[in-house]
Amino acid sequence: MNDQKKLTTASGIPYYHHEDTQSIGPRGPLLLQDFILHEKMAHFNRERIPERIVHAKGSAAYGTFTVTHDISRYTKAKLFSEIGKQTRIILRMSTVGGEKGSADTERDPRGFALKFYTEDGNWDLVGNNTPVFFIKDGKKFSDFIHTQKRDPYTNCKSATMVWDFFSHNPESLHQVLFLMSDRGTPYGYRHMHGYGSHTYSMINAKNERAFVKFHFRTVQGIKNFTAGEALQMKGEDPDFAQRDLLSSIDQGDFPKWILKIQVMTEEQANHHSFNPFDLTKVWSQKEFPLIEVGQLELNENPSNYFAEVEQLAFAPAHIVDGIGHSPDKMLQARILSYPDAQRYRLGVNYEQIPVNRCPYLVNNYERDGRMRVDGNGYEQPNYYPNSFDTTKPDETYIRPSEVLENHIADWYDRNGPGENEHFFQPGTFYRDVLSVEEKRSLEANIIDSMSGITGPKREEIINRQLCHFFRADMALGIAIAKGLDIKVDMQQH
Ligand code: HEM
Image (cartoon, rainbow, N blue to C red):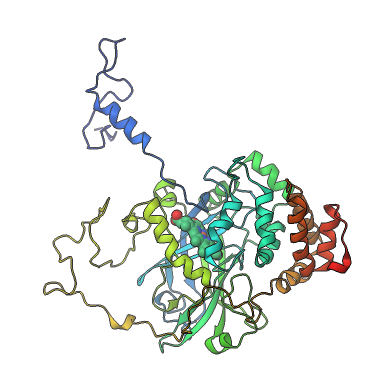
């Protein structure tokens, strides 16, 4: 009576010699026939898979979403169908620019990616801890991310690249102010809000569409590190956010967020004072008040990081009945990008990995491919239509048609209302949202970061960026110019 497990090879063959390789005599050279040595070394050599191209460092936990308020007038999505309804979720939070081994307290936006395992399939809401983003066209994304990563010559991070990009792209200013405030260094993952960030849509049982923004408000309260504290924590515990999330859940202190939505009708969207699908702008909460929907709770840690977090795959493409995309150009670009990245990172059958697998019915005619492990449709037909199986597309899932413009445009309408206006909302953020202390932190963090700009273009980059600060708010511009010791000709601003 022994409940000890036998040691076996990957093919299940029990064996004894785990630490000694067969050799010719106790001191002799090794024998090629010791296949267990080959198996161990070969598997080890293949342990690494590509890290995510962005958001490589992150932490995840399972939990529950519970509906507390009825929003069926906006959506027929089954997960919102009745008060009290619960849906299992997994939430992964992350930094953006750093590698898989980078510090959790780096100044960066934080990812806030949710997978709802709904009976109508998995719904992925892949947002950040900020309601806006640096750019509003996906064609700029790879250029932008290159500036957040390493310089091709020095292989170091570069303030010059970062501010060169920001100064050339004034639409980034709103997000830059979030990033440079203490919100750019949140105290772990539990004390920050989450946002869907983009405009999505909801479709109700009458097939009426409304546009929505998703807000997840932390119940733990907002808490940030100052720049100095974040730097210190980087040395003391680079995995601070991972440890903090894991231990709070292990101790039964389950983090929670309240989901609220803002709703804009199609009519309001058509006549709004600026493009409501512009990801660099927020919707006024006075005009579009927050409507409470439900509560998100994290209550279960993954049992294995690689299996359930590294292999986790989210895609803005994955929306369920009752939820829709919007004409947001960034969102449209993201619809394509994520599954493409995951086919490369995890393989074509990545949806079958247990953490990504829909726990309800999956039934289609996609077959074969590397690492197909789900029975591959067994003996069922692999084409449609056919005379043998009972599969029939369900017409209750037909999406309502959308009215669209009918001309091709590969540029922004710079003359469209607000399209080229990047300064009003950042100015409001600086003046009305930040406290006096937060303003001083923001200014100090910008001055510190911009002091790292080097090289022959230093002055040009600083001056270009200073103009953006001045346009947002005079006091902000003056504070930064003073901190960088730049003489300003006020006539110019
Ligand atoms: C067109 C612009 C964008 C492109 C092309 C893009 C592309 C990507 C790619 C390829 C990944 C890695 C996916 C994987 O390997 O699993 C990723 C991860 C991520 N992106 Fe984006 N992204 C864009 C904009 C955004 C925006 C605007 C947000 C937030 C509002 C965002 C949030 C995230 C998050 C949270 C993750 C990590 C998901 C996880 O935890 O696995 N991205 N992005």
